[in-house]
Image: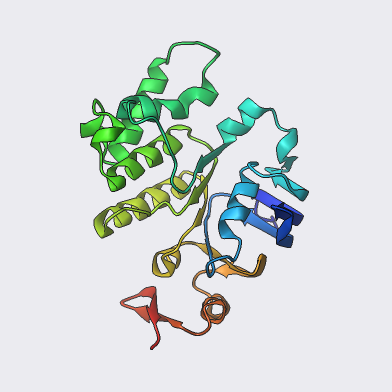
Amino acid sequence: MNLPKMALSVRDLHVSLAGQEVLHGIDMSFVAGRWTSIVGPNGAGKSTLLKALAGLLPVTGSIFLFDHELMSIDRKRRAQQLSWLGQNESASDDLRVWDVVMLGRMPHQDWLAAPSANDYSVVESALKATQAWDWRERSLSQLSGGERQRVLLGRAMAVQAKVMLMDEPLANLDPPHQVDWLEQVRCLTSQNTTVISVLHEVGMALHADDMAVMQAGRVVHQGACIDEDTHRAVETVFDKRIAVHSLNGQWVAVPKL
């Protein structure tokens, strides 16, 4: 029996911020080529976990990227394999949309080298995939919050990393573009890209392959989104204020009054 390949794994992970431990001994793995959504109430440690997985926080414990200890991997190679889209990502308002997305190609370029024909092709594809192509000559200052978010998603996609970490990627996106994002994630996983996302919208998170449910700095459940145990775990951490049901063949989360 062949065991599934793990894209990311953590063992006994602890993170402290401002002298207070916020992640408590987490052990978990993410199967390569699948989409895992991370959900939980405010203060559960979701964003902290994602930042730790990205190598952006000091940790105790071990993080492995494709069986290699994360921080032992050369920084450039790590940036090629792992892309990051954080909450409230910033970029200079004076930058053109095209240049912002081209930043995603930097891990693949030599120091001070001009972009290659492949870089141009990848950036064009990312802009078109996020429906930002028509704004490529505009500056970020001319865009709405939702438009900026699509450009930053395009920058993350342009890295062509095998693992994508996204913290609240649906922020500022209207419902049609949230659906577009779902389609892009499915396209990425079909190409064996591993996607790990923190989502506030539980109903959208249920579209993932797998779900990690967090509470008080711990992962209390990890399993397939179609599993009843996953649904019960989600309901429990939200104090039974939501219920997970099947509607027209899809799982949805509805508030309970």
